Length: 155
Image 1 (cartoon, rainbow, N blue to C red):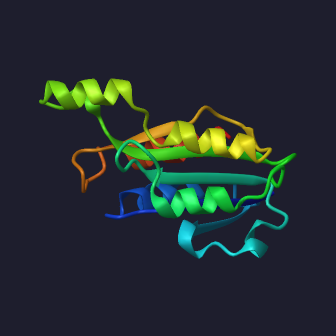
Image 2: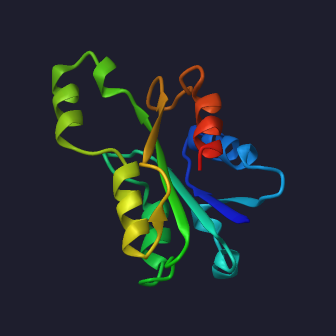
Image 3: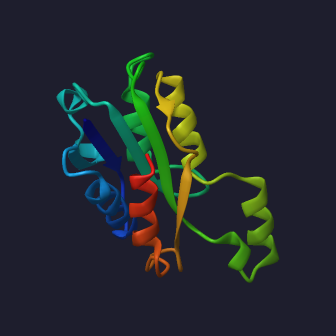
């Protein structure tokens, strides 16, 4: 199987998750892990599984991730498996009641990424997943790299 993990990262946390996902696949799987702004159209050729991830920035995916998703032609993922993830701050642990409220009203990045993959014809193999960072710039919450690897293995 050929898999492509596409991600964007600002502080390195989403990149670490993407690499943990890419490294967790079975050794027979040909995996490439690429930053969203560096994906070339030929890298999508023959891909059977496309995994896309982004940090959650202002309750949405990053501009580079959105640009990548918007570049996918309609039905370009037809017959392909897909998965979506993000990195996020745990709104339940925020001290500010206003931030907790905003977190309930708005979504994280993973769900819209998953919707965009489906819109391009991809079939989600797992529900979109979020991996937690302790603060805006990180670090990742303890155990998240292992959880990302386990998530990837379940695909």
